[in-house]
Length: 203
View 1 (cartoon, rainbow, N blue to C red):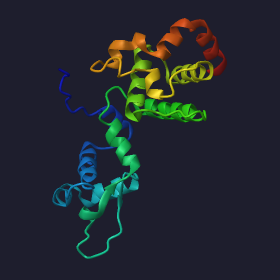
View 2 (view 1 turned 90 degrees about the vertical axis):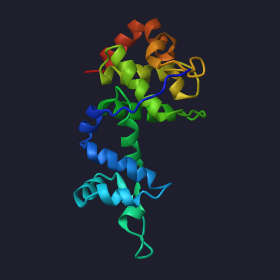
View 3 (view 1 turned 45 degrees about the vertical axis):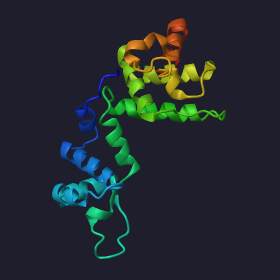
View 4 (view 1 turned 180 degrees about the vertical axis):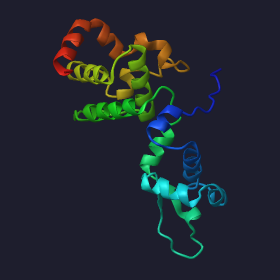
């Protein structure tokens, strides 16, 4: 039986994004407001200061109010940026730098016009952070390793699977199967080439 997951809040990530814990909880309630009426709770927990902060950070938006009954609490919605905060704010190991680096990786990867896809974006960012920390790489070393790998290796068209194939390890975790990672195998088999590439690219 797979173990039951517990809620995790990445406090370091939220601090790096200047998101207070109370704002984070408000975002979750606002997200639920799209599919269920959470207006009663939003009125209780989202005060004017929190409202202004979330709007200024582009984490929430307010739909057009058509009637007097359409209050802020009924019409407020989370933005895509707010969704990212919720997603990565509950992902262990991810730091702000890892998120930015992974987004560069995703852009670089999708730049190849051959039907590629990301897979699960949250997993890509989580696996990127875990891989970097397990190998004690800097953000620059991680980026240029991925750059070299993508330019020289033919592999699956799903980015997530260069790190971890969940079909092979249905209930396993990436951290426990690093040796199966295509990126790790490339690094081990081409270590000197990678080191030389870093010397050229990292000044």
